[in-house]
Image (cartoon, rainbow, N blue to C red; front, side, top):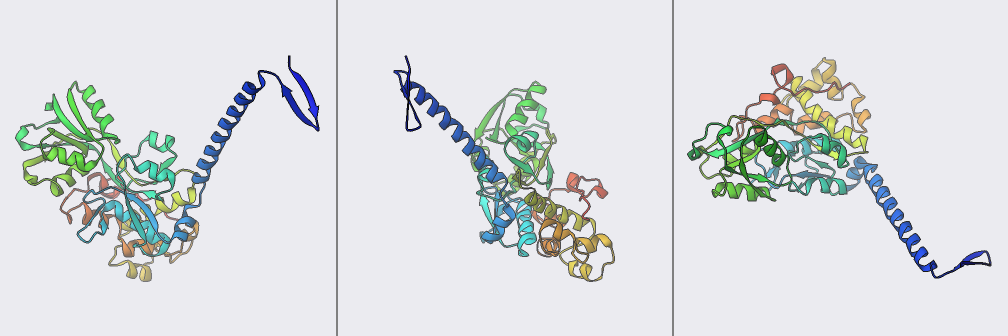
Length: 365
């Protein structure tokens, strides 16, 4: 029997079951509180003013690869260079008027989204495929596409294979935590091909395993294969990239969900680079174009006609600073991965839409 006694407006419960009841109640209350705190923390991170945080810090923290020639890798002086790094530089130029005000944070495939979710980095520019799952389930969202790619196969010519469909029972090196694993499994299943996956956590481990002959095939994005063949293999001419492309791999920058102002800064910095190429604005002629062009689109992009900067919470010279210090998209492509680079990748899908490609700047007005 439970005896209820009131004393000085406090409810006192006396029963053998009381300790158990109270313990269960406190456990549930604690669980609810922890959940609410976690939710509040997630909302706080998502709703943070990243643009102001970056300004207060004085530099952009940009997530990049641990070393991927042409896209993000340190040069002989330790300075980070590449197509993705140029996007980091473009955002820094837009925010600060100085493309050098960024810190490259090297991340492997497993670390990249956690680093973005936690606020360790402000944006991710790390040859990351845009997928529905990533855009909806991780608290992050893509801010555009800066390279259209697809998964391919790199082999030694000694293997004597001309097509990926001849790779039955081959061992295939891949990196864990990427879309490559699932894509390879789906393609093999659809084509009745058996293979032996050889998977490593670190990209350098995958490269080392392939170079040492531990597997017959290296499968990753075709741009990555071109980079590896030229920059990481002792005799590049002994290797060939097979003709098959087995997936769509649209690569682009990511930011945290819930901060639309920061999403706009990153997204429109990329579009500014593409728009500049469409309009024929280069690092060499940007000053002349700003001074003399009568084209309304040029004048809006370069801040002569005001408005675009204000819309983003930036100085009206935001896009001018990008082009002046980083260049337009075509310039960045050519020096990093195109014909002016060791990779010599053709523009292909990454050409402007007016030249048969997919690169298309949204109107800046």
